[in-house]
Image 1 (cartoon, rainbow, N blue to C red):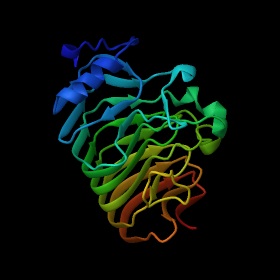
Image 2 (tube, helix red, strand yellow):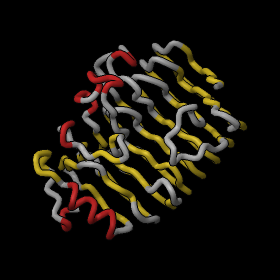
Image 3 (cartoon, rainbow, N blue to C red):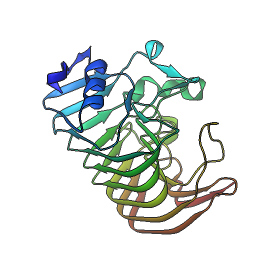
Image 4 (cartoon, rainbow, N blue to C red):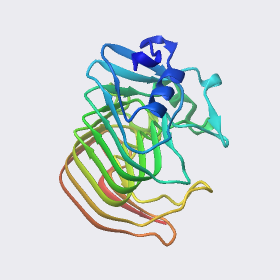
Length: 261
């Protein structure tokens, strides 16, 4: 990362350097110590392995008025093309991805808020051992085949347990598609912990899909306003073959739920 000109001082904008590295490399590392301040980034090719070392943080741009926008909504911190499938993407390491959501949450729904990840069509996505912290909205939104999330933490407004009131729409692991696996994950957030499937309101470019073959184990969900595990039904889509075990749910209004629309 340093080779491409990233500074990592949490003052200098590193967007250009990081995007160049993402475009040029199949493997790249955010070294520690360092806090890499970036605006929205795009995953433009398959076969990416991104390591965030322990002691390193990727920090989302904090000036709301100069944040990038596309099609009327704020771009995610990490996104992939909506119209094509990206393959073999890995995010790993003991580092932190920080969305500075506390800057956005007071505006509620009056101002669009970006997620940390929006990967709408992927084959083989793996997140391992990361901490996703204080996303302005959803922490992880991913759809596709063979999505695996292991050893990962979501921390939104960790000092408060006021749920949606303090950190609205901060879904932790918003996933769908086929062959989804979650293990040893933690969430302290302000909305659903693990919503499966597709909601009823979708952007025009998004094609709703069925969700099936989902396994989750050793999951801890804390302080969200809604469910630990919630199954969403949209239109003619279905959610099937789901198995969860060893779930801890604290300070939620329900441990598991279904929203059929």
